[in-house]
Image (cartoon, rainbow, N blue to C red):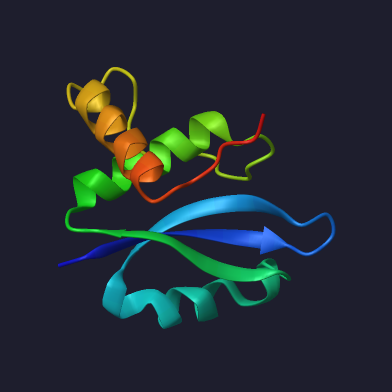
Length: 102
C-alpha cells in the first residue's frame, strides 16, 4: 500500500513545523486528527511505494529541516536499515525537486 509523507505548516511565518507518514487512503483522516494544529494546512510532499521509503524520507527531513516539532526519529541511527533508508529518502526528495533550506 502506498504511503505519503506529509508536512504540517504554520501560516506566519510560513514554514514546515512537522512531518509525518500516513497511508494514502488515510490522508483525510490524519488531517482531521491533527485538527487546527496546522493553521497553514497539510501538504503531501511525496507518495512512495513502501513504508521503509516513507520512513527514510521522513528521517532525512527530521535531520535537515530546522524547527520541526517532531519528537521522535523515524529511524534510529543504530538501526541496520538507517544508512540505506536515509540514502534512498534523500534520493526520493531530490528526485521530486525538494529544496532544503540553506
